[in-house]
Length: 211
Image (spheres, rainbow, N blue to C red):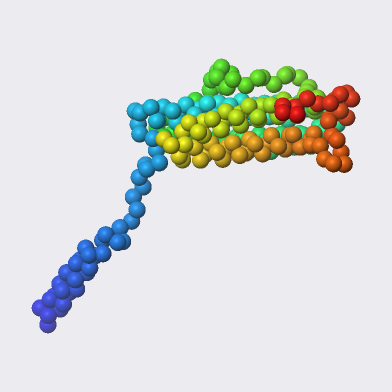
């Protein structure tokens, strides 16, 4: 009786093993491979790291500037600009964190130190003290346009060597472009309102890039 039971059990185990071996090819789980990372020690990695670090530095500069303006904007549009810039600050902070983490993923450290931001962002500094609403709007229209144009160039530079980083930069560029549109909308002209911003700029039209 015991011998028969052992034979049945052995036959079952052997059959299971053979079935598993035959089906192993089709049931194999995917492996977490670094298929989208540029190769370490190559120009591709250096190019990707430069694009990401430059973007991180500019985003951190914008973080500081949006918060500064959020606190100090003054004028007729104080409250809506105050709220808008808080939303921009939070969105830019999220993008900065994602870019920093991507830097680490590709094998580079991320540099978020204050001297790095000041020395390498290449963005004009925001004025100190109270800032009137028209000046805040023109300032960020220009800042967002500048960063957006730089992002587009970086996307082209790394698209082939690091498509995942390029996709992330494209997402950031989309957000920055949206913020620029939200700022410019304060001066948007329509068929019923030839808006020039004169009402918040001492009776003079507000001068914006490309306008």
